[in-house]
Amino acid sequence: MSAKIFITGIGTDVGKTLVSKVLCRVWSADYWKPMQSGELHALDSLKVASIQAENFRAFPEQFLLSQPLSPHAAAEIDGISLKVTDFKLPETDRNLIVEGAGGLLVPINSDGDTILTLIEQLKIPVALVSRHYLGSINHTLLSVKALKSQQIPILGIIFVGEALPGTEEVIIKHTNLPVLAKIPILEPFTDETIEAYCETYGEEIYLNLTHELERIR
Image 1 (cartoon, helix red, strand yellow):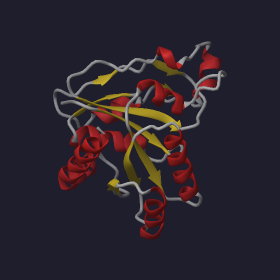
Image 2: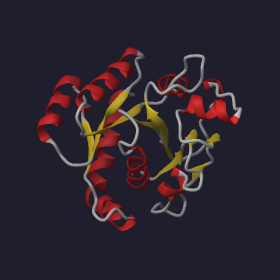
Image 3: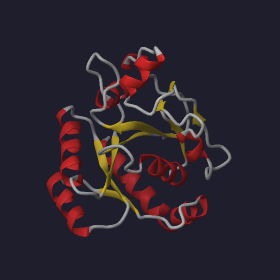
Image 4: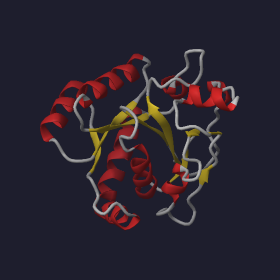
């Protein structure tokens, strides 16, 4: 039975696309990013697709916004109206990874809708990406609190970057959430190193995902 997971992060540039790439590979999932702001010459969907199996499908972005800004600002510049009710999950018989933009409270429009509102609309569980930096504990705990306040199922946390066991321990203790994966800084950062990571840790990540999906059903 196929399932869907929304990948959100504690902020911008925390590794959501890297996580999506890894999860699509190890979980045999298709990929969809509802909207992309800026970098239209290097879409995240193309980055994710580069190491996937032949039957992998990256569904087209519903909105491509020209400026690398918050969706509400980029859409206003482009003269586009964004409404959460416009977003519909693509149909697929495979698992599906949906990648969000920025953090949970990034505005989508001037009506008060955010990425959190979009997740509520799509009605799928979340995997939260956290990256260690000064303030990341606070940002992670606030993100978890926001998700729980809307009763959105959280599968667990994915840590990206250099391991900081003390920080991770605090986050796990305060959130009581499982760790789905730890993805280190990969040097060099290439498809080959990502593929090697998937070969080593793919089965463990797959089992973590399937276990947590069963837990919330």
